Length: 123
Image (tube, rainbow, N blue to C red; front, side, top):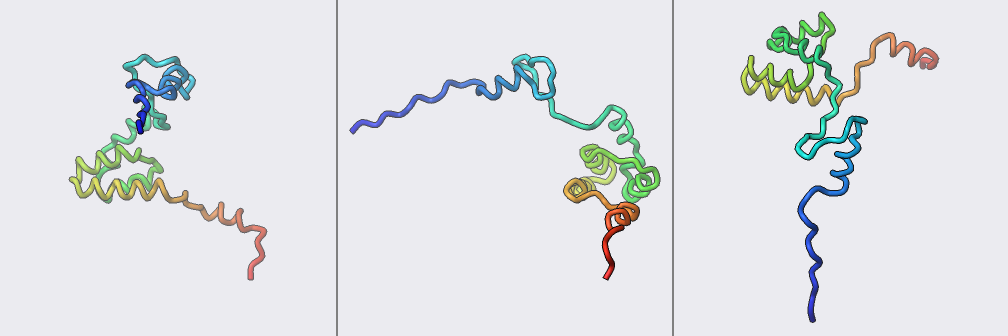
C-alpha cells in the first residue's frame, strides 16, 4: 500500500499577506516588499512629547501631577520612564498598572451617575 504525501506549499508570502500589502487597511498606497505594515495608533506627535515630561515618571509625583493637570501618558512611554527613573521593579509595577487601566472600564463621574439613575425609583 502506497501513501502519497501532498507537496509542501512553496515558501513565500501567503495570499492574505500579498493582499494586505497591495490594499492596506488604512487606505494608504501599496507597500513595497521590504516595507513594514504600519501598526495603527491613536498617539500624535504632541502626545509623545507631552509624555516625555519627567514629572509624569517620578514615583508618586507623577500620579499627583496627572491628577492635577488631567494629562495622560501613553502606556509604553510610562513603562519606559518608570524603568529609567525607578528601576526594573518600578517598570514592572507600571506595566501591571497600565494593563489594569486599559482593561478596566472608564470611571463614572457623579454627574453621569445622576443622569443615569435620574428616573430610577428609590426603595
